[in-house]
Length: 420
Image (cartoon, rainbow, N blue to C red; front, side, top):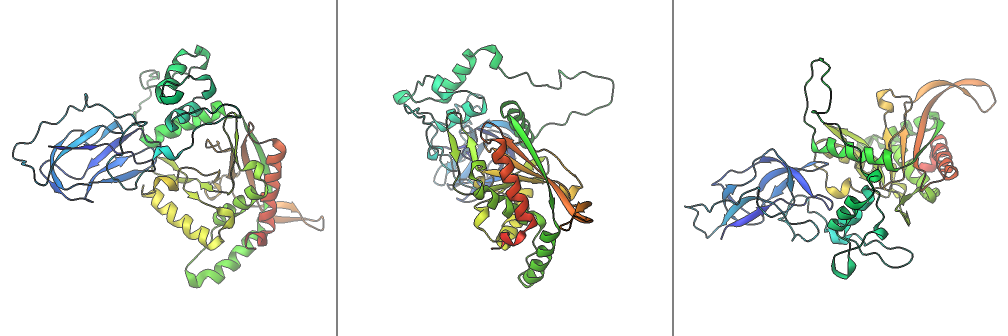
């Protein structure tokens, strides 16, 4: 009997993806572990490997197909002992039943192996427990819906995806999302143009940033920070680390500073979750990295407890694999706060958009020589940068945000605290 090869879930939140490229063709013999295809998710292009031996009978979904649902049959394969002289007819891609992510059986193995969705906790309130599937919870959070107002139709009143979508459909029209512009709705002004198809990454960036600015009340706090002491310490450390082929960047030291500051001001190391505030016990710093077609934020976990040399090595390796599209989901999903540095591009100051469900992001501007009032009250010249924190005002009060910015500045101006 032919074996169905189904679209895998390459991350805990993946519902669909793009079948970027087939690496096999009909009639090819494959072994367990052979790479069958490249799948493009919302963050990276990842390899999909075979788990059985056999012969590819048919390619159901052609390469380049977008929005292929997780669980949809994308190819069929004959087992190693089956007769392949008369290939079985391939199922119709349009009529293939799609397994819902909430109830789907585990997909074939892939690189990397996705984490089961059932590891995410159900939602709770201070009163009765609200039971919701991870997918339903995520959709409700993204659309600003209160789970307590939704009636569940699953076992024991469990709220599932269909319940959230039905509730949103019945909600007042004032909560509906504004229509998105399309190529058909854009006016033709007579100026020559070319419509460039959006990548999956760009689509997700557009959706998440729109939701962030619509749903999160941002508050911005800026401090000017003198860099001279940090630059001097960096030069000394790099001299000492040269034999180990490690070269610290300013960004490595800023990651450490933000991690330490978050632990010193735990009121800023949080996420807003409607009726609860999630307080994180460690500082996992997401670092913005520009990649072709978009942006990704690999995570330096437990940044406050790692040495600068280790942060430098990890960040260099993460950034390299991010640009190659080879990060594993756990390396870019999560994080408790973010850091975005555009100083190397000459940007003096900017205000970054919060990456939900995080509640803050630190935007770093360029270090430049500026007039500065020295310790003896004399005017001198110092290397100064502007740092702007964007805070979710639902979760973080202005005073707490100001305290975080003050601690961050002190750690940079007295950088020995970063190596203590």
